[in-house]
Image 1 (cartoon, each protein chain N blue to C red):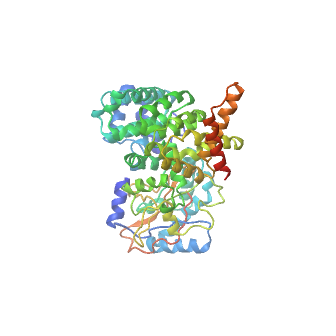
Image 2: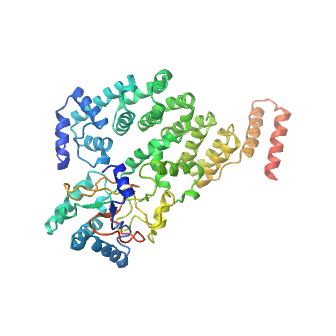
Image 3: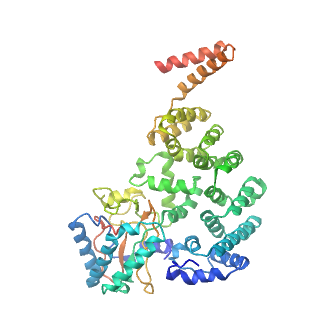
Length: 252
Length: 279
């Protein structure tokens, strides 16, 4: 699914359900229970397997933070382990699993909009600025960085999309968010993409994995990558349920 | 071929390994135009990230052919930019920015310095061209980037960002000739903190004074913008008026050492400015 079609899905409301599941895996049982409840509502009995998979990822995030190709191997190993435990990843092929986007890819994606606005930065600078915007509400951003918000909003995925950056290089025992984990509105404001309609919060970039593809988690990772941790279900899993106010970090 | 190739990459890698430079260039062009997708990866990986991801798993010989093919395509695009769609040209430049393409860098540098050729490149792609050259910048390129700041004044700030990384001391020269436009000053603001921060703490006072002096030719609002960026980065900008005082004092001292007498007006200006500072 391209950025554009992902956005169209969001716009047309075809994507529904467990809009998200993002937060601190280590944040405590209440968050985990919240996540599990949401997943159960959306996925029925298959949630158990998926939770196992997420837990596997969480437990092994230290390995997953390595520079490629390390994580590729780690993910393959985890996939094998998942299978050996009797789980079937193919059951989740209809999930829309949020995935991490390389910051380099996002920088590339937003660069044409920056150019159009007369904001000429090197790629390194664009990445650094995107990271620097983490946690900065638009109206509090320095004037020379506000152009980034304008550019982000101009992208097909911009308006109404929420995303945050995380430092994947932090110690495996620490979550990507600062402590305590921020609330959804803070996450939204982390890159301040404008006023989203109430209850329409999304964490950056949802990807629909086609039924023909086994569940796969991205293995590209780097410090400061843009996080996508939207876990959602396609229509057919029921009516939209809880909007984000707590989240589970899948620790990728 | 690298034995650690992920299974999903194998077919793409096998395909690339078999192609000679000409065939690679043809296939690459089709990938960049998004007419062909044979590589692994999610759709949003195409074409740039998918190409970059696969490159690292190629044999050394295939990597070289790949780079040579990119070189061919950049030459073709440079010669006939109108024959390329904007998205394909942008993708080509993005791939070139990610891979070790020394010859491509030289070609793009020549393009940038040739005004008539650069005029043929769509304006919407100019920044992408500079960005690609910047991705391969080294200390040897400092003169090139100083020239860029004079020839393409909107991109002077981007040139500053490059010099901050590859030749920090030359970045001061660029600041002195920084054009007074929003684009250039904006780019400087976004990188000035990193620029100052890379100097040793005992040099930072001197660096801040140099920045104040080098940017004193800008309009006051733009000076304020730069000062604000310096503050936001956690440094205290040097007051330009005190900088003027010390410049005058330094001139007097130097002239004295040379056995010359300072002109009274210089001394008075310097002294009155100094008094204002004290007040």
